[in-house]
Amino acid sequence: MTMTLLALAIPFFLLVMGLEYALARWMQKDYFRFNDSVANLSIGIAERLMDLFTIGAFYVLYDYLHQRYALFSITPSVWTWVSLFVATDFIWYWYHRLAHEVNLFWAAHVVHHQSEQFNYTVSARITIFQAVVRTGFWAVLPLIGFPASMITTLLLLHGLYPFFIHTRTIGKLGLLEYVLVTPSHHRVHHASNPQYLDKNYGDVLIIWDKLFGTFTPETEPPVYGLTKPLGSYSFLWQHFHFLLELLVSVRQTRGFRAKVQVLFGRPDRVSEQIRPVLAARFLPDSIHANVRHPTKRPRFRGYVVGQMIGVLAMLFGLLLLEDQLPILWQALTAGFILLTLVNCGALLEQRRWVLNLELARLVVLWGLLLAITGIKMLIVVAYIGGLSWWVYKTVIRRYYFQFLYGLMNKSVYQN
Image (cartoon, rainbow, N blue to C red; front, side, top):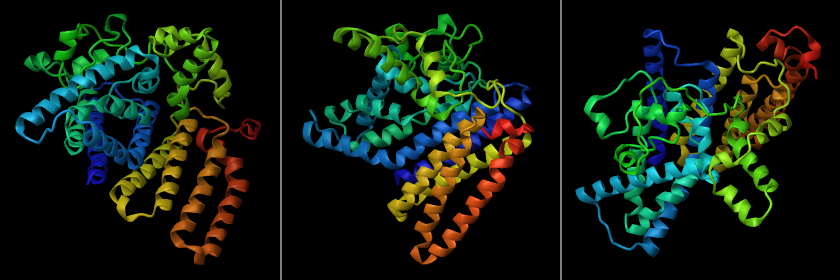
């Protein structure tokens, strides 16, 4: 049932994103950028894909803690549901605040703040690492005595609201500004303006920020993104850059106590000099030096959008048919989706090694086709695989970059 709801949420959220895009165009506002939106959606797709394999584990954890260690026996009623909502929102505030103040948690949460745009696609920037950290905080709920069924239901409903506050198309909301977290409040939270840093951590209720002194109103246009922009659309780099920076910083710090202070200290304890060194190592030169302004060629956009539509359709099918698909099919499909998301990031940055990912995707597709059709179709699958290999070697390698980017210099794409 949970997976069915997650599957049905996909077209709903995409519809709302499309409506926001249409409204922004009608308002003549530049609230969307192609590369940014693709990067945002890629991260969201990966997180929703991981739900397929982790959401059951979260439920088992809550149920185990409730059965073994619950302090009270809480049963569903109007007041216990209200109490659970307040407790959930309160814990979220402290999780969110500590995610900005503790490096180990910031490494999981930083992905959500990398976008330099602010629209509904940004709400998709949630990683599996962030989901795991949040689960650790919410694990206090079954210890109090709330049943796992109540917790997971409330978390699904509670998680809907933040989606709608990631927008610039809605202004201030009058009296609601005093009680709820509104788009105006959350714009402040995503801003890198000095006066807006580390403010407005609330998820649904803004009262926690006002109570604990972290509230500030929106008084000037926010500048979105990190204080030091990431400058990359790489799917892998976005997920792991700060974790690598943190590990390097800990390694460079002398003394056990000092290392622990780096792990659990504020993000400004990590030197800004580390990232450029790591980027030079893990982000090799792109075909075009300027990756901040990727190509606007229709072919390129069509190819990337086609891949995104394909993985969204596959994800929808996986979530909807989870109980009916063999685990091997699920694993191969998940592998293809993840490779495609990494591939899209490499395309956005025009990396030379993107062809290796294209080949890897072909191999996984052959495997999926063989798993679906069975050993009796081995000859057909082998023929399709051989044909695909021939196309890759004779056509794709020769014309791939020229087709997508319009490059005429063969030495560029033959390296």
